[in-house]
Length: 173
Image 1 (tube, rainbow, N blue to C red):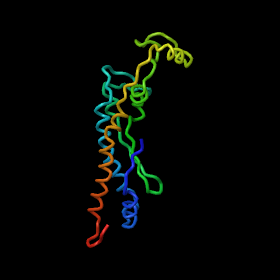
Image 2 (cartoon, rainbow, N blue to C red):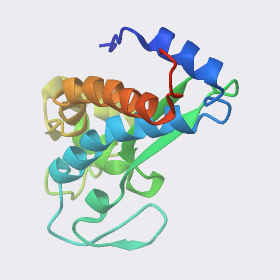
Image 3 (tube, one colour):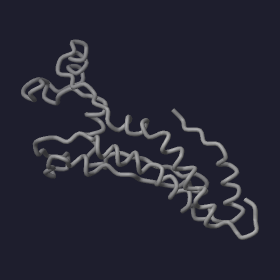
Image 4 (tube, helix red, strand yellow):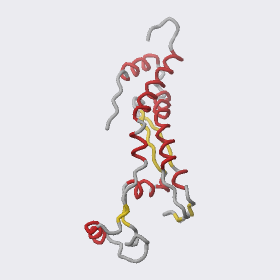
């Protein structure tokens, strides 16, 4: 579901004219500010286990590890004309997005995690039978969709605030 903002082309043209977009800090800051509400809601709604477990790296993770490793990353295109942001788990906490957000079969073949085969053919067979499927519990996608209006208003607000700080006296932007 794309977000459509009007008036950004004019804003970008004005920023180019003023010379404030050369390094892209304004765009990145605006996008980061807009996505902060998604980050906070994702961290609050991310599932937290009740027992410690090992990560794929062998590191011991305690309950709440995934919740603490939800991050907001921002970036710019090489031409410094577009900024982007992503909210999600770090590489070490990928499992919270892959398995919890989208659902999964249990690793060992049963809901209790004991016994069973671990190959794709068995997974397809189990999927047809409906056995050992842990249903998805979305938490990241709802965090984004529930904050769409805030994202739109924050993007617009951050650029208006920036224009007010750089507007030369006596000029009309």
